[in-house]
Length: 114
Length: 143
Image (cartoon, rainbow over all chains, first blue to last red; front, side, top):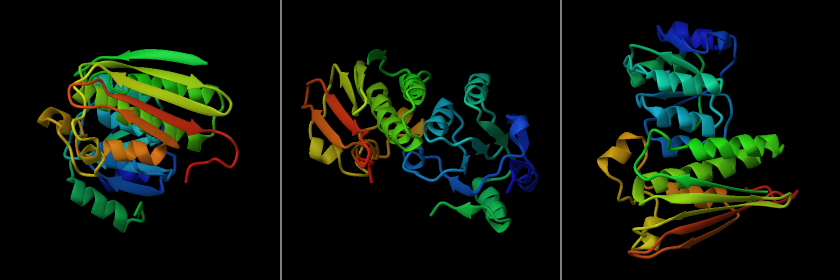
């Protein structure tokens, strides 16, 4: 699905990377554990997390993940958004929980990594 | 090519900065995306370990056409039981480290999975020196 579909499905707000909403994303991975994210080998992943700190952005950068969905209205800091922008990472926030967001995205065709 | 960087202990605001810089260098040198990813994942885990667990240290990278050798060394306090520390799920991380999304005891095993040769020299009260070799030659792609 396109990132614009993700935004619509989770009633999201795009905080960074508005210009990338036509980008396709194939897989979803929900985790607050960054070491777990670092084990992923697949591409085209949407990271769904409640961990709103610099390491979430850094981990995405290191893992070549180009889109992050922060759940429960987590608001990344300006430093985080600057870092995301620098690395072409689109940042979306949703009022929904990780469970609800993952469920809706799965139901609408976003595949799991495992 | 040799580059060297200092890593400050405890400062999570800049944890990952060295890995980010090295990633830029590796991409400029036209390493394959698969090589870049496994080198950088291992380096980032090691860099976070220095920030989270040590008194501070440094990262040295030696890059040539055959291999990348990265040495991550700190000034202590060392790992008392390395075999235990290599066990997935075992960790001495503080609550602060866990809040950063790490400290689940996966760091060293993630490093091991991504390196071709891994050497760790440590001990209680000693510096820890982690030497990671990544082969770049054709046919040496890591499984």
